[in-house]
Length: 486
Image 1 (cartoon, rainbow, N blue to C red):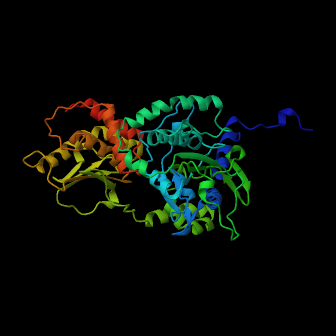
Image 2: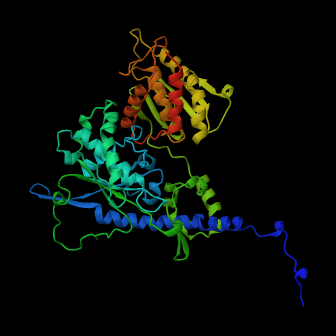
Image 3: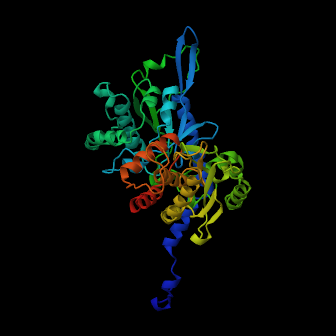
């Protein structure tokens, strides 16, 4: 008979590490294959939502008869583009959930999204699709967009009744107390927007009525497109008093964020945190090779993705975009051969020592600041050299009356053309030009303040809506300007 002394218990070092086991199990559930299939699942709902709410009929009129309009799909970045094929995406927007977090509500003067107004006015609204890893409607949709709508309604339609200026939030998500607290802040949000001193007349001309947010989720019953020949009612009978901004949550709500079904694990908000799982895969690459990626076994996916990424030529983007009369930004891949009266500042995605920064010629400079947050931090130390280089170039282009020769341009390029280059362009605009965009001589005495920075950033974001400078990048610009006096 076996006694207790005969039983050999494993030592502590031989005990199975259940924490490690659970971590590995979780990592398997969040595999590339599961994420891509989950994205396709959510993209199908995006397509259904667009079919149900995206088509409107205007008319009929004697001149044109019934005109069918299509409310455009707008991807709320940074991850919305994973859920909308490029062929059906009309634009990108940047509504952040952090601007709607409890007791941190604000109207972002850094992310104005004013380019959406033209789309909304032309198509009588839009559908915005973000993602969420959390249950329910994300703060970007339930609070950030409603704040945006209410502030713009007050700014662009000041003479309309108070109902047009009201804050609208989903009552099943935002409590009456929180709604009231946000509404009380709207006057201060409006004041901050008006302080940017933007020309509101062109914006007002793009809209015929105020903005009004609506919400749909995967739990919302969707009306199918009409199949009868009966003409649809004019859109004014549905949205008579407002342009609809339809906020759609694409991801399903599942316990724990994951659900096993149909041979794969559904991952809620699968398109988020791509730096942790995508191996360099982008939304554009995914949609271009979706069938191949979905047909590939999990074990072979990383190699396939690396091959697709390596074979993909850098996008040239849309070319240089002017953010001021004499300053433009673009992606590094979009920099073309030098032009007369142009100097170029290239922000290279590799960290290099200051003494190795290359000034190829009086009109071209390369600065290795790195990527992402590292680059944003390094920008602070690089800005004095960059602005000094640009000033020397502009001095060479100065005419006898102190103005710049016609066609003088400073081009700033970074990897995306949307973050670092925009921050550097902001610094150059303030350092080298006055508020009327006149060249400012190096010996001009100027003290910079945050209001000047906000005002200039507002004009840049209006001129270049796709710009998305990070908070850390802008903090580097602020630090540089506040510490230096001209």
